[in-house]
Amino acid sequence: MHYQGDIFRPPSEANSILLQITTGCSHNKCTFCRMYKQSLFSIKDDDTIMADIDFASKHCQHQHRLFLCDGDALTVPQKRLVPILKEIKTKLPWVRRIGTYANTKSIKLKSKEELGELCSLGLSIAYMGLESGDDVVLKKINKGSDTARMIEMGKKIRSAGIKFSITVILGIAGTERSQIHAKQSGLVLSEIDPEYVGALSLMLTPETKLYQQWQQGEFELPGPQEMLEELRTMIQYTDMRGLFHANHASNYLPIKARLPRDKEATLELIDQALQGKINLKPEYMRGL
Image (cartoon, rainbow, N blue to C red):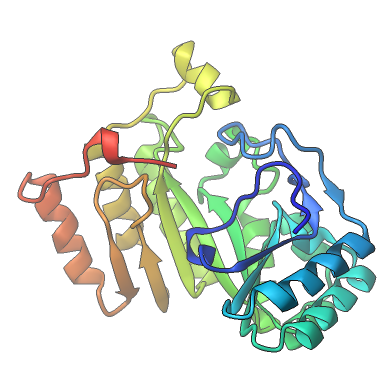
């Protein structure tokens, strides 16, 4: 496989075929993220992509999922993306699910009919970072979108039949707007009603603008208790039919809940942790 730069994928794609069709991230301006700082965004040439699909057809016959890397493969124009998906369908008939990262810009570039075409060719799940449902926070972290656009594009891609997985970040609002961020995130998630939500806990990363703001005293990182309180509020205000996970390596308390069924039990579990009846993950065991 012809990989360029660092390769990232969602935790749920750990055992997937990783097919890199773009490099970098088409936005790459979020203050908290350094994942693609060393990579310029580009679309790889068709010959390389097709050669990698051919390689996978010979060496990846036991993997039933495929993930299109890098940061925003959905940006690839329809006239190029359709042949790629058709080639996957032809050469890798055992692949049952194809996933990609997406953002509001790339979803907006595709019509509902085009998204439906991609779905019919096997693209069955897209991952998007909401990060926060608070527009003040989204502006501060330079997300490049607001909640109205997040909701609009989330509903659009879901209406095309593509499952949607959304990431939110506990602690991203700092201490000042912690509970506002939590409540508003729950309300936005309720509006989109995605199949999956993954809550991560912020870990400040050197060489990012947010890390510099923290060093300069311009950003105050919430502690474990405050992040748990955020998680509780977020789940309290989330009305969706799907899985809400907070079991990423960064989280202090692993949570895996099917909403609305497990909502009250999950809130009770968090309450027990807040009361000190359940041990939280120590700092040395947390990771990105």
